[in-house]
Image 1 (cartoon, rainbow, N blue to C red):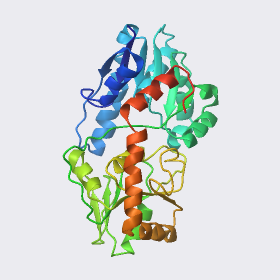
Image 2 (image 1 turned 180 degrees about the vertical axis):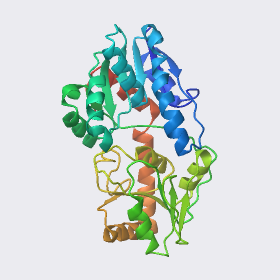
Image 3 (image 1 turned 90 degrees about the horizontal axis):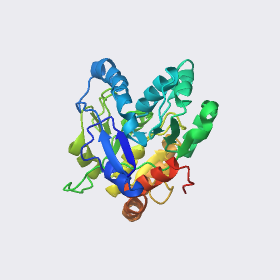
Image 4 (image 1 turned 135 degrees about the vertical axis):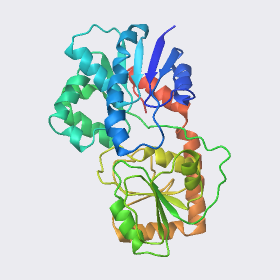
Length: 334
């Protein structure tokens, strides 16, 4: 039987992707992972977590021969392995696949761009997966030497929400750290005291406005509960080409919450404008109009129902695993 390993940047036990990959591939799948505390200070992230994430994949080098393929959920794992294997000309018969690749602005500039391209050029790395068409085009242009390794599909990650009570308390929710324009959202809601905004992010400065609630340390079921009780989820993106917001978006759909998002490639292939959410330009007039639409009960119920139906149809772990197996086998995926 084919042997597959998957490397997570979290505790591997109970991750539904492991079992789904086994069902999709017919292989025996073994998971490896790391544990980090849910609440992490800046010191922890940069002085403890970053070095550990470089060392962890190196510990897998001696085990690679046990597996036909290794899937790196965290991109740094694949980059570190590829760099070391290529630098020391190690003979590796295992195929490596990078399942989550995000190259923010600094990674697209020298010298990091050259280092990443060198690592991805390792012959053991067969596939690099990203999760939006905009990113696929960007990365193929940024890393032309390895352009043929990039593939794209729709990301899926299941967030448990069993037992969470559904309710609409009228506030808008914005969540996530990467590539968010919270300056725009906070400024907008500060000028509209009749609307409430809850922000879940540990890098946003507090606001003096009484209608804005900044939650710097909200995780797990507390976070899911906030989504379950909002009126809608709102996104404002900075870089329109970087993969962002898909996991928050999927949780909103699963809980039947309409989404408002500024137009970009970030949610391309996820957001269906006018159906499971609303897409707007990043200006106050457009956001005013979108909020007005969602304050209409009939429109809100229509979009909420479409969101839940779309989640059930497209965002299951089994469908995601099937797409990953097809992509890494170099098959065409719709």
